[in-house]
Amino acid sequence: MTNSVDWTHLSQNYRGKWVALAEDDTTVIAAGDTAKEAHEAAAKKSGRHFLYQVPQTLDLFVGYAI
Image 1 (cartoon, helix red, strand yellow):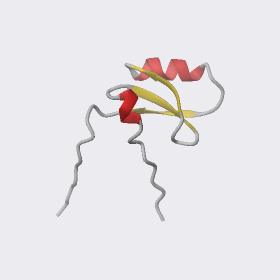
Image 2: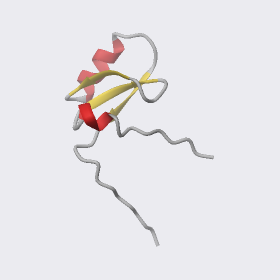
Image 3: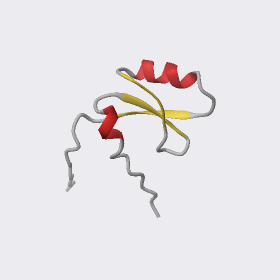
Image 4: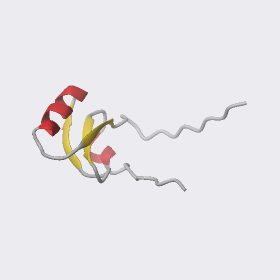
């Protein structure tokens, strides 16, 4: 079973930016134009986080391998 997380809400305010997401995988705790900026801002807050670069557009991509 796969758990999926809807991150489309990130595109409204953070297009093209790096965001630091909290352990719940949805709460933005910091953002920046670079990964370093987002990480440094998130490091000042307690708890674990991970970085994600929000794409500029929400284009779909479907791949197929032979």
